[in-house]
Image 1 (cartoon, rainbow, N blue to C red):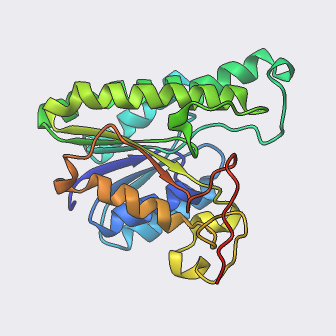
Image 2 (cartoon, rainbow, N blue to C red; image 1 turned 90 degrees about the horizontal axis):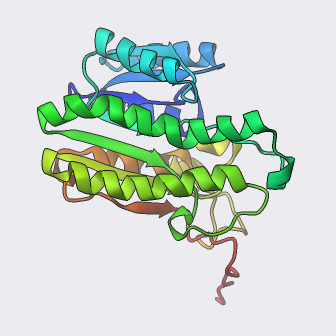
Length: 258
């Protein structure tokens, strides 16, 4: 992937950071994006440049149309046209609430950040990808988003992501003739510092909630994205991929007998 330009939203920390580092190791030039984590983004930029590739860090809120366009424009001016777009950023309200308890502005922000902004970013980079007859677009969902289940207390976020599932599948079909693949990765319950850890670092950490028996890591997600972005992965498109160690919050976990 040497010389490819990868734009990764929400990439100063967490899963976005791990994805940026992984693609940089493969030779991609990296456009980092942040809203509040300026210091982390700049430190990561320096780490990536030390790998021998180019990197920039751009502040932009994906929920705000003008800012997301600014993000793409800065990337094009400093690195070149986008080859790989990883839509990792998406606002999330951790406090559990009924839909009736959300404020109007919160609803709009969640939908803009998790659905509308993603669609607009895709729309902005598609012309250059079509011209080159090559492109990789990755969306982020949540575990079992493809099944369109109810998610009480997460109504707005879940609705936006489930809408993105349908969009992922549709865009994949429409853009396949142009050499552009579109897929969605759906992380399991990967929390806190584990988002920036390698598989080896979490392998000895027991997690009774995950059937696999260990915690998930940032590498679990980033290595799948890396695979989807490879040249020979052009036959993989329109997929909604659960990366969860078998975690299913509805079905009971099977306890093995040894």
